[in-house]
Image 1 (tube, rainbow, N blue to C red):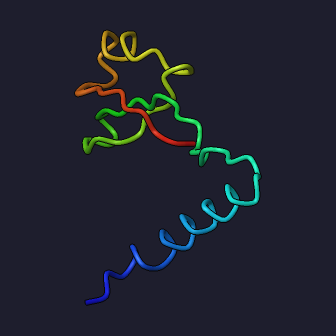
Image 2 (spheres, helix red, strand yellow):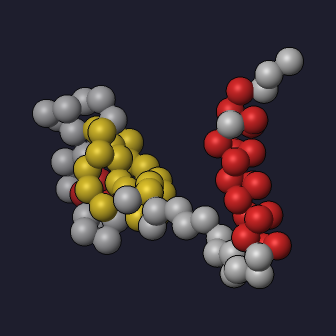
Length: 79
């Protein structure tokens, strides 16, 4: 029974790594995008939870204390 994705790109990438090891080439770990902390919350203009800004650019505590946003959460997001 075919297993789809596991027999396609994943298997090909694994075989490419094995081949590179056999040739003595260095193997680098797959790099994922850099993650940033994103601030989400609700506002009067947009009551549904939405992106408010990046945590290093927006002070979530001050935003909540001012009453301009509520239900604030901070999540890691790839950039």
